[in-house]
Image (cartoon, rainbow, N blue to C red; front, side, top):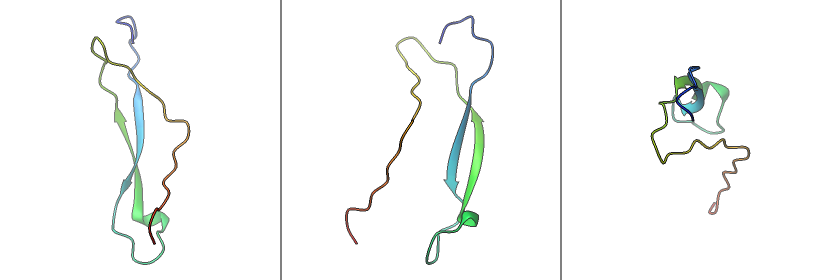
Length: 58
């Protein structure tokens, strides 16, 4: 980001609130917002568009 950017960027993440028993429920997770630190020289910020979490063993 350029040094002229003054608006703080926000990150939204899904955090495991409690270990699921059986099928996961919404209450097993929580959403947290946090500030993204200003980028340093040579750093880039990527946005995840698609994310796949596929089990490989059952």
